[in-house]
Image (cartoon, rainbow, N blue to C red; front, top):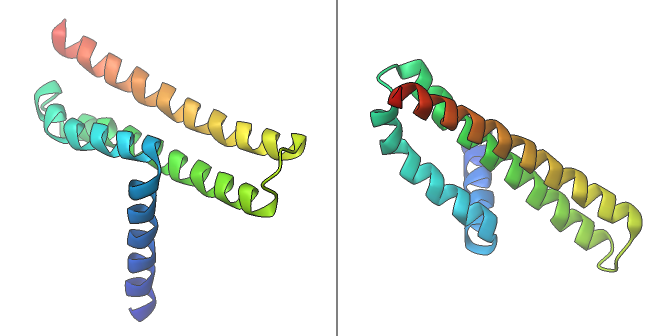
Length: 115
């Protein structure tokens, strides 16, 4: 149990650090907080609400992983390096894919609600 508690506090510290220093994380947290009450009006189905919030959590997870990759890459070499750029671009592509999934999910849910 002690390990689980320590893991929770480590995770909370990482999220707090990202929220303080990363604009993209700040924006995604705001979107998530706004989406929580909005999803209650978009659908009455609890599984659809879970999906709407879940895709936003996936975006946040991808952003946190991308931020970690970028921080590690910058620590390894602060200079511009073509291989490091590819690593950073791959992390960015992962965030883009998560954003695309979230956008399509919300568009479909809103379209279903409005039609």
